[in-house]
Length: 329
Image (cartoon, rainbow, N blue to C red; front, side, top):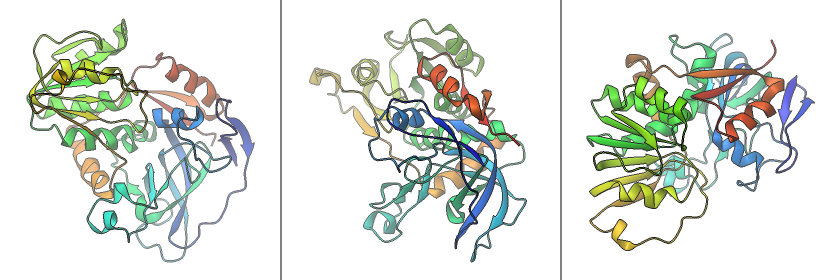
């Protein structure tokens, strides 16, 4: 099969030919129809996440059809359409798993990082960590739901009850969360790269009350905010826009250094907290909600062999919405 593999930090992905392996016990073999490009993929490729599987195939926003099942799999059959997210497996035994916090598992595996992912024609996955995909979505539309949607949903749950919600870094996750928030009656304030008129227009088209640059203060103080951009200096900016008692959620797996800041920005019972990974229940809940809203991802598709070009465009902020790779048939 054709795949795009990670060779070394800072280098382009390499097109390779890999064998298609039969699924082992508890696993499924999936013919990939689409795989989204997540900013976490950039952190793997750029070396910010430092312990990937050697020569790993990235990609954890995978949509495809099951073509074979391993021994013991009774949840899926050949022909079923599934999604494969970032969380590839958990140990099931540590105190995090036993307390319903498998997203914090001590011995997890992650799709496209510690196990091969979806930048390929085929991939395998643990059947217990794959999910049926609503028929309302095409493969390309469904792909960003698997991480931008799931991590965005987990972040949003922490600020779902606020009236005025700020979203910093208006990319793939943010444009999905904006739709969630508007549907639930929240006023959305979208913060983009300076001068990114396309992202600001998308935010307004999706129902945002206000859209501007990340270095601007919104016209009203925020009750809660989410930062999706991996930019540490956004934290004091967001805190400056936050009302007393507000919550600031950090949705990224990696962030640049957080600058020194005045305690006054945090005082007033403001809360800063991170979100790590996802749980399977997050996926179950979100995939039930998404088609009812309905959430409509805005996607730009690229052939799999153009993965490096797509990644470059994403890194430079030239894409609006989500980028999705389409493997050859």
